[in-house]
Each structure stands twice: as structure tokens, then as C-alpha cells.
Image 1: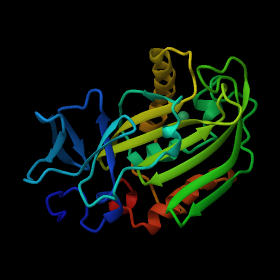
Image 2 (image 1 turned 180 degrees about the vertical axis):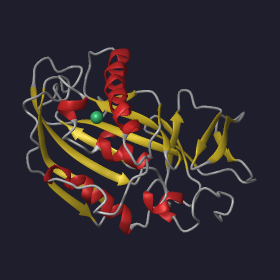
Image 3 (image 1 turned 45 degrees about the horizontal axis):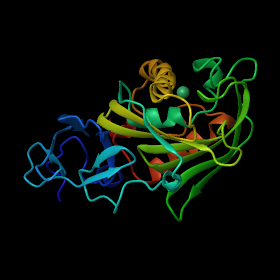
Image 4 (image 1 turned 30 degrees about the horizontal axis):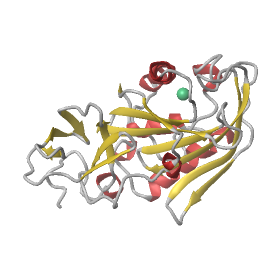
Length: 288
Ligand SMILES: [Fe+2]
């Protein structure tokens, strides 16, 4: 497949072109959407299979159904979208939290998801509260065997870590960036002493400075009503959207000197370095 049909993306921006992107939830995929500036039409055939077609192309795009989402790619993607082994546990609840349009680069949205420091200021009295604003030292690594960025040993005191959390909780976090626009976190589950809740953020870049975010949770929670779980997550995400839409530039700078990091930002620094080494340009200030 050539990329000449997708004029918004440079043909050699392979990490972007060859990735899988969630473009909607399987229970109600949109008939039309946009991926990387390309208009897509989605329809379900008589045999039940979903087809995704890109404007100006005859052949249908690759399609996958996974984690409650419909996935596609403009290039030559890996065999399947991101594997999340925990989703095989039979008592986990899949919670698709609704898609949200954000006027910021999708890479900014991923980076914000990886940020512990904003909790007390953006999600006040939910995911953090003053005066407990300090981010304890954590460990960041680029796992070259799987080509992913991880942060482990993260901890933060949270007044309301989850809908099912009835008291404040010292919440432990692990972050995982699986591809430039796909990230997830594992956090202490109030209902299970061993297994963490899993929260994923699948980002669909629609333009360099715009995206649609698809948050999906895989929770251990037998009792909370689905609508309440969705509302809890949407409230948090809408708080993030206000911050994201006010960040300038809207594109993500990859130059390490562009924004001055602190120790708490070591995951963000690792993410930007990883994007730079992958030669990702879409959604970055390097594309200007
Ligand atoms: Fe946030």
C-alpha cells in the first residue's frame, strides 16, 4: 500500500501510518469518521463483518475488533492491535466510556494521561488534593524487546481513586505506552488486593492538532452501575480536556529544550525521546 493517497501524513512517517487506531466503539461504530486527515466510511455488510473504506481508495482498510473498539490502519499494521492480557480475566468488566473530541494533538492527550503531577490541580479532590502535590520518584524504562515505554513504582494519594473507592487511597500506578497513540495504566483496585484496574486510552488522531479519544476501562467492580462508571470517567476526562485545549503549542514539541521538565516528568521525557527515535512527526512541532 502506498501512502500517496493520504496526503496529510508524510509517506515516511511509518510509525504513524502503520499503527492500529481505534475509530469507535463496536456497539455503535460511527458511519463516518476521520483518521489522520483522511475521511473514512464504515459499514456493516450482510455477513455482519465491518468494512472501513478510505476516501479515494478502492481497497478496504485493515479492520480489527478488540477491546470493545473498531480498529483500522492506513498502512501495514502489526497482526493485531495492542494485547492487554488482563482482559482475558473473566470477572473484568469492559467499560467503554464514550468518545471525546479534543482540540489538541493526540500526542498531547497521551502525554497528559501519563502525568501524575496534574492530579491535585486538575482532578481536585478526586485523583489528588492539596497539599499532597509531590510526585514521588518512580522508574521509567524503554522496553526495547517490545518497543514500549513503561513507568513503574508510581504512587499517589487519591481522595477518590475510583467510583468504588469509599475512602482516600494510596494508589499505585504502572503506565504503559504501547504505540504513539495507545496508552494504558494499571492502578490499585479498591476491590482486589492483588490485581489492578486497567484503564486504556486509545487516541484517534483526526488532524495534527485534533483528535478523538476513546477511553476504555477493564475493571474489577461487581456492583457499580455501568452508567455511573462511565460518568465518573467522563467527568475526569472533561477536566483534562479543558487543560489540553489551552496548551500551546497544540502540537507536541519533541525538542527536549522546548519545555523545561522536572523530575516528575521523567515519563513524559521518555515518551518524547521514544517518539523522536521512531521519527514520529504527525502531531508534533517537527511537522511544521
Ligand atoms: Fe487527567
